[in-house]
Length: 292
Ligand code: RIB
Image 1 (cartoon, helix red, strand yellow):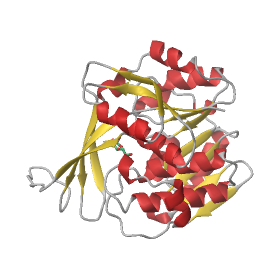
Image 2: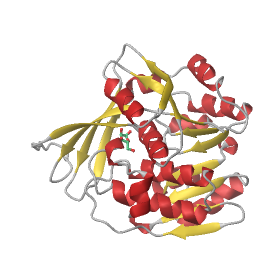
Image 3: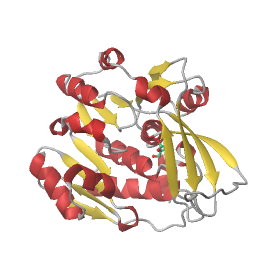
Image 4: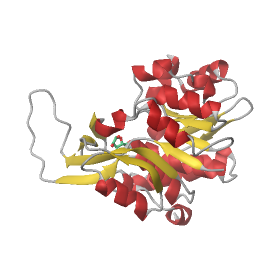
């Protein structure tokens, strides 16, 4: 079984501020830091640090060497990362004093994924392989259709949720990884039970992990529903907490853990990530998670 993550790679430009800038306001930030990020890259780093060999597919631009270097540092296979002569994906991230963030995302090369490139990548994978997806690259509906045709098991984190997902056939998804905002966008419901019920009603063969920030996380499939509370810590920067959760949950489940054990490992990993600055660099190793 091979694991492929087809997803975004971003350079995150992070500004620490007393509070988020409001309309008409100008605030000076004493510090500006550049980190490797992107939901795709963060999730590949989390999968790799959780001990799972992973292939990353995606596209970087002129400024993307640091993203490639980071992949190599963690042993992520970058055979399917394409270099393009264009501006790469990047963000402007404000982090406030409580560690919360708000993000402006520029897709760049992440939005230049074509059906031909998708075909090229998926030719290397087949029946029983795992595909992890988020929604920061172009052609997600096409990737889902082709991967399903090839017999791959699809993990979808529909984040950030937008109209591109309207044409995506969710019945082909094996595992949904979403938070309460994406849960509302996908189902029209805001209560956790109703989100899970609705996903199971529409897609009875799927399974879902629903994360609720400080209110913990749920796993459900047609037979099971289990809850995991958070591990309380003082947050410094919540960027990539969800990506860390996704990577560690998927790696644990594929490694044979029960949903309850996988939720616990993922909750511990993301509780460590929020105590550190940046996206990809904040993700702990499996040893750090075990020793916590
Ligand atoms: O999930 C966090 C990520 O979202 C950041 O690294 C940023 O690049 C945005 O894509």
